[in-house]
Image: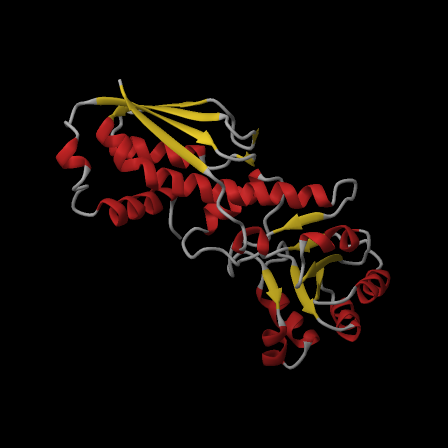
Length: 276
């Protein structure tokens, strides 16, 4: 799994390569400057620590002053951070830092917006594994900053029996039995279902969590009644912000949303640099 350090190193190498031929030939090495990152829209800020690391990796002497806290709602026009250091460091780190900050803040902003749609209900919104390759830890972190929750991190930390597993095992009961024999008693088992018949099979098999995949509202309500608190109920598939309130009011416990990560739009932040 990539660490944040790995991702920053990769991003800087990708951008700077053997050297910044513009900055290196224009800006004296020791000339000082100041950078100010400003919100160009209303947003929820996420990724400040990552942005800071970009600049301190380039030059440990760089000063990074935060004017807002991680997870804050930030109004358009707000100064988010001030960075002080060499002009060369500011110019070389600008795009990479903004890429991280804009992407992660975009996810946090969308998560916060989705959370608002289910205000007053007890349902939890969770993400999925539909993340940018290599960025999963960061993107799931941004989901949490936005106020939503994480589903499993990967294939290694949670059992989710999907349609192809069921087909390979010969049925829901067989799939649950096989995995129960192999895993710790501390690990919960989730089963994906697409019909009310499969919901009943999963319930009989002893699933801890039953996912209702691409069901309509009437089917979901019936499934919730059938399960009757004997397992947690998760809804997935075709979830949009417009449907969230209706889905939440069916009595499900969890709504998983790939769009929290895969469809989040980077927010608009800019950095102004001046000599000091």
